[in-house]
Image (cartoon, rainbow, N blue to C red; front, side):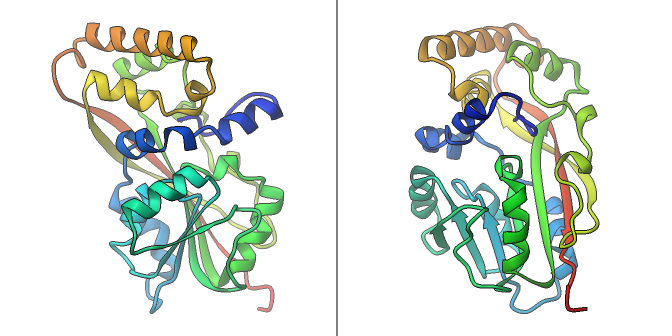
Length: 261
């Protein structure tokens, strides 16, 4: 996962829109989120009844599943038609709407929390932050979560070098996510240990769902995934059967300021 993707505007646009074609693989291979991270994200509004939550950029519903353990009142918004179709097939009981972070199809003050999984870095924040503030109730919370492979572990660092690298934990801080605004004046950050059970084959498949791989020409993509698979099969920690991929879930949250206060 690249938390802060590099590239020109055209490349970034291609990467941001690349996931729909691999919606089934995304649903099968991407990790979930630890409940401790979801609970922390919702903590400022946890006492509200009913607790109304928006999963923004919901994808295939990885984060929504965790949110549903805390409230039944979850709405999902997703811009990609293929991802939205996969979401609805997986979680038909959840209200799921087509929309973007820059144009959220909800009324003013209609949710108590917005939680974003693995997607805030794709938003046009100059437009999305005011729009998210609009749909949040006073004192509502905006939170974002990212699963990042733990590059402090030597074999994970070696894998990422073969896979052409992604954002490292040392590059992370809350200010890199977004600058404080009048609506969201203070940003808290923390992290949670996480892991995903993988095999060499499923690990290669997971990397195949990352945007920097999805946009490669097919032959180049296949060659890269082949090199990754060869590397995993030759690495002692990943060569035989299942293994745990060590990850860290990075989390930020900001409580919406009440302009009328």
